Length: 309
Ligand code: ADP
Image (cartoon, rainbow, N blue to C red; front, side, top):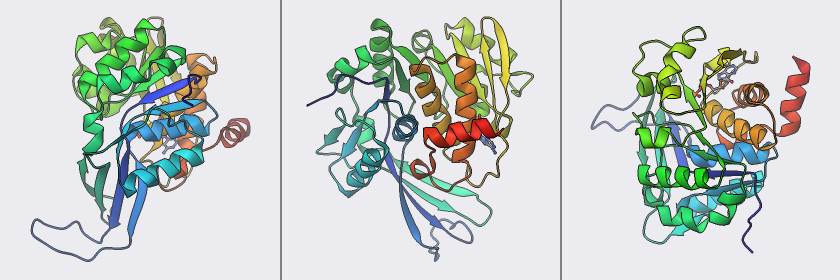
């Protein structure tokens, strides 16, 4: 039976990341030998949904996967995280999204993403999930699916008084009609610069840089600043929320863990400032382990981290 009860609904991409480490990145036309080949489930939508589910929020992911072995690997990861998959569509004609990644000894990378079924997620797929959208407390969106679908989902959430969180990644300038539907925008430094045209953003300038986004109708902007934590900007001013000190090993999915944790904390009734504190702890923990979905912490681990600092 399909579920109507959930607190967080995430609408977005699911990919399989295929990574090979190599001494140097290959030049065009060159064949080189690399290290072992590693397959891990990724994609911003799936990562953020897994983060929220592992932290204890009742979460559903709305996404499109292919009908292939890669989809099976993603589904296994979702089931380990306790993530709801009732509204995941298996596309019969397009393959699952994949990211082909080469990483050299200095951490420099080359990535090609083949979006596959992610590019086929339609407004009709979103409409089918109306029972969960109208009951959810928050909806989380990113930009790795068609913009028409993102806009439709935000509109539907607004109509049903479900709070809209947008993580505008990959960064691009956004239409005013979308911004006005967004309650909370979570953006890293690069994304804020692209969205606002500002030429600088740090703990002291975030509030000024985010001004145009508030004028466009966004209620609050959370600017994430790596190890420095995050700054919340809203109509009442700016609040800095310091990060947690950890030995970071791999920060690739820190931003996704942060967004999933914000959704989880808000759905459970916390204030925005408390939610950012919780998300800083969750994201810092995810940076202490390799990988995306496998590196995401549980609620107990985050609570222990918060108590210990
Ligand atoms: P993205 O991963 O999208 O580039 P950031 O680098 O701003 O975004 O990281 C997102 C969040 O992850 C930060 O706001 C912070 O909470 C946490 N984080 C990232 N890097 C570190 C780090 N080195 N130490 C502690 N926390 C970190």
